[in-house]
Image (cartoon, rainbow, N blue to C red; front, side, top):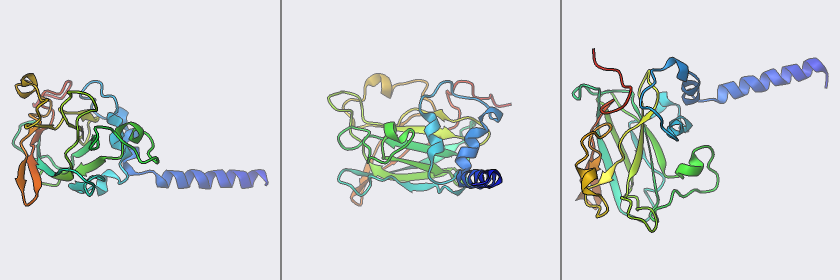
Length: 221
């Protein structure tokens, strides 16, 4: 193959790869332009592995385990701005959790952080009312442990870096300790869910306040 043909092929491949990147990858590449908040957060960059670009995410998602055997639950709520009153739109929420055996199980084709977080994960973006909702199964505690069952959440606001907030926990969990129930400075607000059984499925609500007890978060002027 002639040299100019090789150059043309390389240019075409580069253009194709560039077009195939989602808006989430582009956002990741612009990290230096964002306000850094939250301190360290191992694995929070998994939020950029969304299979759908951020601008096309819905405010409702069904996690891949929902149709499997186990206690089904709907979790919903409103994400508010730092004042705790104004609904925050276009906030991306990434969640992941264990399976019914307490493992972050995979299906063999995961890449990136999916190899550690497992296949039970999802991405949501709040609507103009700050509303979000997702359907999943109640996770199990880690095998041979007394660690309370939980769902990991990561937040990505416009113009800020991603950061974690306190886990979704379950009020009826016997492993949920008093110190966790009485925690004074939960990141994002209280994450303890109180599920209610209705129409054969559990329902729970958690409202979130952006930046609450999050290190480095800009103070309201």
